[in-house]
Length: 187
Length: 187
DNA sequence: GCCGGATCGTTCGGATCCGTACGATAGCCG
DNA sequence: CGGCTATCGTACGGATCCGAACGATCCGGC
Image (cartoon, rainbow over all chains, first blue to last red; front, side, top):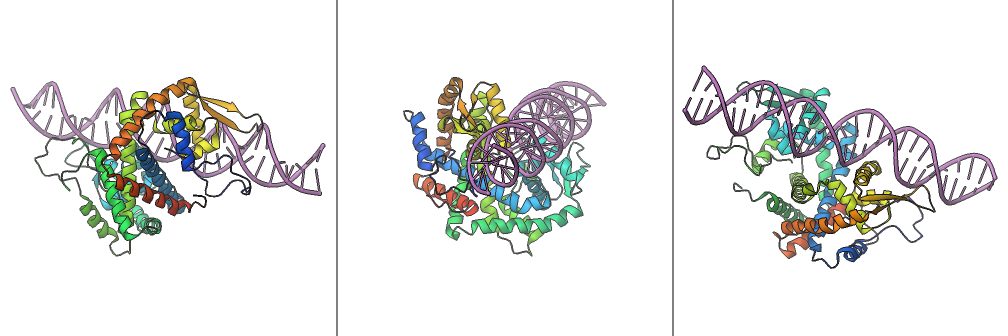
């Protein structure tokens, strides 16, 4: 379910009037059942996954707007930079996998980052098909400043949850990943 | 943290050999601490949110590949269709808000859906700035077939979790949304 | 040696995706 | 009733984003 999202700052100031165009979660579910009520649907699953996407989008927007934007950095650009920062000299296909983007997308993102002097390509001597990625000194310098800022906002968001909840939450998220991608035989 | 993701179907069949280029979560955290170990970072928060994005991406990919693709439908196109299906005649800015995309993006998506005869624009008589969206009969017919398929896969994924876990999970996700967007005074 | 199959990163076409700027329209207020 | 301001949806430029096709390269078996 994708319920109408309430805007953070109301566009109209006429809050005294009834809200004729906003709908609560309950109204959404009711309206939904009016359309598919006869079908045997799993509303709990739909609701859980709807909130999964909502949460991911909200956090991503928050981090982009509060941290990345002032450094003129996109979400994907930052993730790629982070992966290469930690795994210096990693091959492009593994970077793409870690960043959860396709190889084709990575090619374009690296082109952008390379043009800004943050990342460098490097051919592999033993296997000339491979391309390894490294951060330039400027790239390292940027991440050393940027990542603590990024993590501070992450911490601020998660701090709303109790320590116990965070542990359970993280574990359940991994359960969901495993439910989709299949269990990991190694871990 | 964005740990290297294990591919679902190994590209190489040489599983007997050691995996020299894959890294576990523990290795990622250790490599990370080698770079930022001196800084006071919140690893628990980073790990939780990393898994949030992983889970959302995994579920989205699964639903796209197993359900949407055979109907030649993109994720965003489906979400927009769903919103308009439930809230017939909704104004575009509210559709964009519900679908978690910008108004500009919605314009393009609606253009695509309109060209396929699934959605229709409709001017508002009282306020000629507004554009209302409705599903065509073909659009309704498609959703009546597509959404049950979609929800079946959602149900399959969530079925891996106990009923109790699903409730807690959904609640925590809403906590995260509220932590970012601010608490909702109505609910 | 070499050659057929597998894998690498890239290119290409097309659809999102967004911030900004814009023209059109609505509503307030003197 | 004329102007000021706010809001609507859209056009535009630029960056992602992906599947499919492609040339280059590696590696297996003969």
